[in-house]
Image (cartoon, rainbow, N blue to C red; front, side):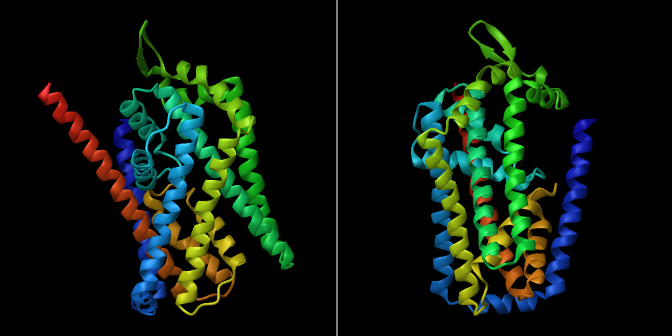
Length: 337
């Protein structure tokens, strides 16, 4: 019954997202969007795409550092990229906002390196904490820029987003420390019934995660050097996005300030919280509303959102390919055995 409800919800949310996406494209004008792209030279497009891959390196490196420091082993950058892209694909395609791919990423990590699944899951969560702290830091920089411009309304908006993220992380860690948060989450999704194999028999997955959970909390609270470095790598991911956005609009002949782009990034991250698969419509709305708020070119905003969606879909596609490849390999080994 729950599976049927999930399918209905996914179908309805996809339809809503597609309607929103089509609305923004037709409201701005599809022809105008492609005219905007025609203003770019081939070398400019190649440069902007290259920055997407450069940003990907920073995101993958962040995850690799967390694995090395908390997990005490170091997968290759290529293997880490496979894990990260697989998790990214699931997060991107399911209506879960910033979350959803962590269990899949943890499963792949534990399977390939014969590592404890609960510990692998905690590694992915620690990576997410580093990512959210970088989002908060990025918003704080944006708030400072707007305060310097004496635009206090937008400045306080970005500062509120920064404080919200920090507060949520702090509260989550406090509840996690007491074990109450995991008890609630596992009971909510019936995951307290999930069992994993141990040498002395099967135990509840929730108990195993709570067993290692305090280690993860202490790790984050101690701010070890590699965790701080992973935070800066994640922040680098967003700073490269900032440079990419600035170049994109500069090549199109649009004058978009860095402060405006900080606001745009915050709006993208906020709108990603909407429960729509692939943030359909919500991603475009963030661009459209941000540029409309500052009286900037709407065609350019939707053109940039189209480029961003194309790159996100490309990386998600690669992640799914890695997942399919790993599944096919497992099936082949099973048949062979």
